[in-house]
Each structure stands twice: as C-alpha cells, then as structure tokens.
Image (tube, rainbow, N blue to C red; front, side):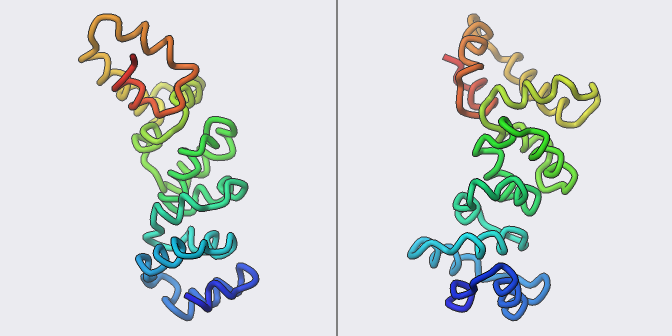
Length: 175
C-alpha cells in the first residue's frame, strides 16, 4: 500500500498496480479500503483504481467529484457514485451516455440510483419509446402505480420537484 500512496502521478500508480496484480489481476480491496479509512488515499490513486475489476463502493464514494464525469464509465461503483452525486441530473449528456455505452450499469440500476428523483423522469422524455432507460423508468413507475393507494399520485407530484432521493425511494414513500 505504501508504494501506491507514494506515487506522485497516475502513471506511477498504474505501474505499481501492474507490478502488484498484473493487467487484470485481483487487488487486495479489503486492505485498500482499510488503508483509505485510516488515511485517505490521494486523488490520483483513487482515480487509477476506479477502472480495476471489483472497485468497491467505499472507495467510489471518495472519488473526487470533479473527476466523476470522466470516471463514471470506468466501473459500476464509479458510475453509481456519479449518479448518486447528482451529476447525471445536472450534466446528463456528459454522464449517462458514457455509462450506458460502457455497460457498467444496467438501465434498471441507473434508474434506481439516479438522484434526484426528477432526473430520470426528465431525461427519458426525449428518448425513443423502446429505449431501455425509458422502459426501465416506465416499469418503475408502473410497478408503483399498481399498488398505489388513494392520494398517492398527488403526493408524488407535490414532492417530485424537490425530492433529493431516487425515484424508487419517492415512489415507496411519497408522503
């Protein structure tokens, strides 16, 4: 771990990663998470780790917000961090297409993690009817509609614009 922490630039970090695990070998994720908890890993180390197989959520939550745009398509954990941070809402065309093109998150998970709730609703409006993201959003709403009690939809509409959580969270607790 000390060798990675001592790296001054991303290319040095990549060289250490290659020496430790090879091109695609497993990394000691539990040890890296523990080391990060004890003393946060430098930004460039986190960014170098983001594309490695198994990149864990605890490290993804520490990725620098300014770098999440280009890191979002690197791994499922990085994509979830970018979407949960609201970047997909504020800059959807810079975040969502790369995530979908890289295939790091399924459309259903993208809808489930997209914050705030209004984000997926706004984003899918211009998509084709058979687009997977639009279908995933519609199915999420449809499932909630099937079991909706009286007053459900007015409550959802009242909170939709200001709700900071995900669409599934809003639909589960609209009041």
